[in-house]
Length: 181
Image 1 (cartoon, rainbow, N blue to C red):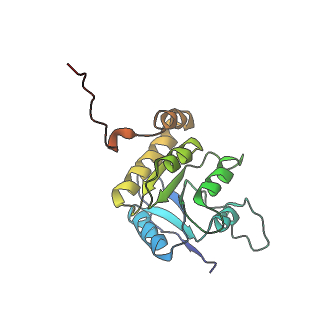
Image 2 (image 1 turned 90 degrees about the vertical axis):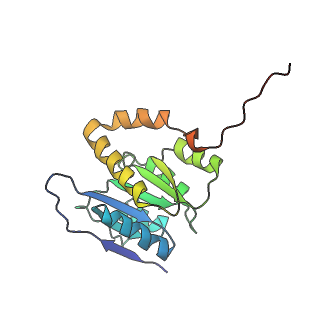
Image 3 (image 1 turned 120 degrees about the vertical axis):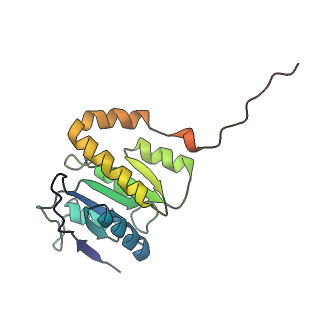
């Protein structure tokens, strides 16, 4: 089922910039959840059901029925990792290899907490890796990060990404080894 749901809030905050998120997920329920969380956080939201539809929207796969909107700059792409056809990881690689889109932050979502997958996504250029179910606090943190990035510049974002390849603070730490007496 190919669906493209273009939903944009008409919120005009007086002192903050409207941010546009492209959300990609093959699950209708997950799309609705992430769309709702993003709208609560005052994002403009466009949701699509596949990596190929995301590329069409972004103008990377030019087709006669492309639905790319030149007037809607995308500030963030949030994508599910496991999707049929093109995975979120493959979408991430295509975006980061594009000269016109590589500066757009990409966040991967997954219900699977696999460290090698997380590392691979971050090394390939993902801004973050969120575990599903995504929470409002995750979306709020992303918004703060985007706003901070747009005011401080992309160079600082890249240095932060290098420092934060993998945050092991939340992982169980091995018990200390004691020397035998």
